[in-house]
Length: 274
Image 1 (cartoon, rainbow, N blue to C red):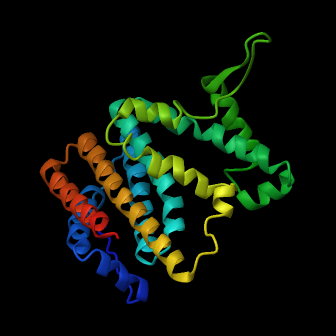
Image 2 (cartoon, rainbow, N blue to C red; image 1 turned 180 degrees about the vertical axis):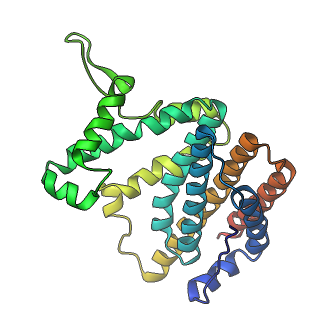
Image 3 (cartoon, one colour; image 1 turned 120 degrees about the horizontal axis):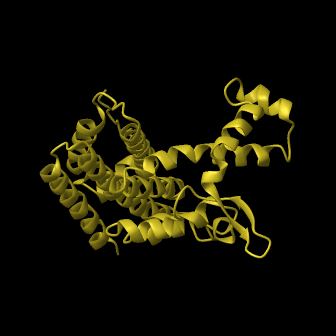
């Protein structure tokens, strides 16, 4: 079904539209394309279903980033941007090689098994089963892992010839970016590398805000929010391009117009900064 997004009447929302008076028309064009891509019957063949659903997750990421950014929560928007970026790159990678979608899906058994092992370091199997319920009990997760583990083994020690589960479903993010190329390489630093420092327990996250006055902190947050939002918007255009390629939606012209509109708003924002 179609989605809508409503802005509240808050001080931060007002400040956002003062900074970006032409943002709303660009957003309307983007929303129209989102509905063209996702407000339609869900494809049932497995590779297409995985790619469609991953694109849907990117759409939700973008809306959450939009909400936070328009309300001045720059750090929160940056944290969500990292997830959007990683999903957008994975989607582009699978669109180039649709057979990878099956590998992506099967790796879920490895991921949930790792989550189980980590959880059992601080909780009991009985507690896990009670919380997770039928279908995701410890025994069921172990069974699914045993089914796929040989597909995702990598050498741990060449001398001993021991193996361990891979830490990623195919390539690491940087290698995947090298495969899919532009424009994902352009956004790597802003949307992934820097955002990693916001997510984890790092000195950068501890010292996110120094002892500057309130106005300086507000300016910093707003600039961070703007950067995260416009990166997210441009990445979502690429997600829609992936959907357009995979499902032959004939949206290339509309995507180009929308991308140019967002880029213009972003350029105006940068030019207006003191």
